Amino acid sequence: MSIRAPTLKDADKPKIFQLAVAAMAELVRMAEMGEPLWTRNYLDGTTVLNENEYIQTLPRWIRPKPVGFQREASRETVVVLMNRVNIIEILMDVNQWSAVFSSIVTQAMTLELLSGPKGEAAGSDNGVLQVMTAEFQVPSPLVPTRQSHYLRYCKQLVEDTWAVVDVSLDSILQPNRAVRCRRRPSGCLIQEMPNGYSKVTWVENVEVDYRGVHDLYMQLVSSGYFLGAKRWVVTLDRHCLRLASNMTTNSHTGDVPNQDEERKCMLKMADRMTISFLAGLSANPAHTWKTVLSGTGADDVRLMTRDSVDDPTRPPGLVLCATTSFRLPVPPIRVFDFLRNDTTRNQWDVLSNEGVVPEIAHIANGWNTSNCVSLLRVLDSTENSSQGNMLLVQESRSDPTAAFVIYAPVDLVAMNEILNGGEYPDDHLTLLPSGFAILPDGTAVHRGSIDAAASGGSLLTVSFQIFVDLVPNPRVSLETIETVINLVACTVENIKASLSCENA
Image (cartoon, rainbow, N blue to C red):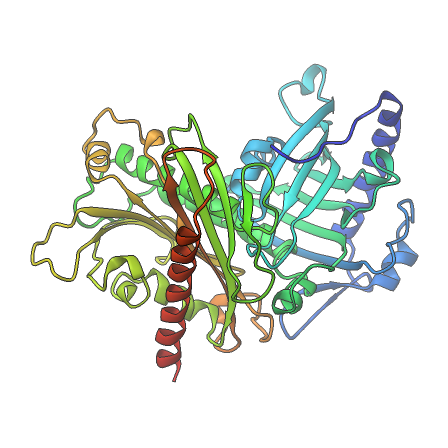
């Protein structure tokens, strides 16, 4: 973990406790108040903060917004199929939290637990106060990541309602250090409902410096769309639906037995693959990635390397990650459907050699049929046999704010052993993920959902992770760099050509 953690002094702790109480009070008010603090945007259905009312109504106990910073404030309410206990467990366990919200959170750690429940409350999260640090991302190298040091405080408000609040600690821990992002009181109220459901009201209130954001992403980022409250609640909702659907009978095709253990193995592999893919997308190459070539413009390719040593989930040696972002004049849902479809894969996938890539197994991963984990067999265009020598695991996931198509080649023998109930550990299967992150470009009114957008364009990030050398930390040759950049360029051109024809 490379996040620079500030030093926590004993003299700071009373201030942190006072800040936690004040932040909780502000969060509750922001979650419960209506107009004039919050107004409804009837064009897209979002709730917008009235900043003048906010300044006048709520206590100004945090320093004023820095000059040049912009406020991103939003509120969303959703009913999810998960009980209150499990939601709070996710929020208060940094490992679970960063895994569930891996498309938003790139790194996170708990620096110190300052207080916990006592007496009869022991075993619950009521009263837990912890100091954390995290990094948040828009999945593109053209948008800087946002690092924040903050407290997280959990409290039971009434019998059936709990709250979890975050607020930045930079004014206490690093008063003289310039920051690019500051979290005002943000978090959620969780109300228990019958039959295992919970009502979650999420508030995001962040002050951000937009310097470094590329013009291509400025409209999307400045709208607060991707890192706003809606993004958090739909991610949580999707996680809940995924768990619920996996408890029911899943639809399968092809060679994968309809057994719980095989399904769990496939889903675990997909989770590992997705987290690894998302970690390589952002504009911060810290902790494990080293920058080889830094692309700063649209269509530029950013190259990074990482050494893989003693990691059973990756091939040992040097791995190269190549990433680029660009705009397509096609709605996000059409881009998603095109990229996830096995019948159109040979139109863009250079490595398939224009062969057929049939889906041989399919595991539903939510109520939406487009959310699934697939097993694909790559058949060379010259093969007449129904047997290919390469398999791909692919996860397709979408929600109202974003979509992803992520895949990785897998060893045929090891995969067959896992799926046939063998002893090969699925968490030791090496995975080098590649794929796509698909976002709206911010030019169209999406009515809160990319699924409903029939107009507007897409912002597409393409990323490949490629094994380069068995020896860790060698110099990457110019020939390798040229080959990888050509791979990315050909993929981008194939996608543009296919979707332009389709859109004509």
